[in-house]
Amino acid sequence: MGFIGVRGILRAMRAMRPPGDTRPDDETELVRKARDGDRPAFDRLVAIHLPQVWATVWRVLRHREDCEDVVQEVFVTAYRALPGFRGDARLSTWLHRIAVTRALNHVEKSEEKLRRASDPFEPEAGNVPRAIGTPLGALEAKELMRRLADCLEKLPVAWRAVLALRDAEENSYEHIAETLHVELGTVRSRLARARSSLKDCVEGRAA
Image (cartoon, rainbow, N blue to C red):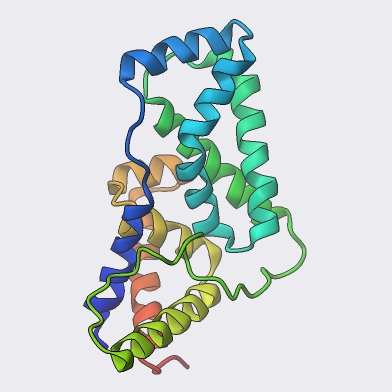
């Protein structure tokens, strides 16, 4: 299968994003209350943003227990830092940056290699494109997802992070560079290498 198909599956992960269930002015009020120590207001913010934060951390770590720990760290960090949140960016963007930073820090601190994950790239596999048609097609799609998960696991975490932020979440190169604290050229280089390595691996041409 060509790399266009592989990237199509990666982009299908954007369906994980939950629909906005609160208006911007409602969220602003929740943030204000949470800053003032209103715990139910903060719990509401957690409920709204948990799916996206979980998905972001999972794309980097790909291990459920580690993901649970880091997601908890993300919201603890957010709660403590909320008084300093000025609203220059959307809360979702602010949380996204915390999530990526915490996930990468978790990897850097670990002395062991990431354990192989048998789960798909996303927390839920139900968003795989359904244009399968036949049992053989379903089997081929399942095999492709398995190979894709295996190949993603083999990528260096820095490459996987850039790939997820660009191809899965469609962030701009500038946003990725700012989030990861690297130069724009580094983002482009890592992305090109990640795409090339993933393509070769999925198509069985990896060294």
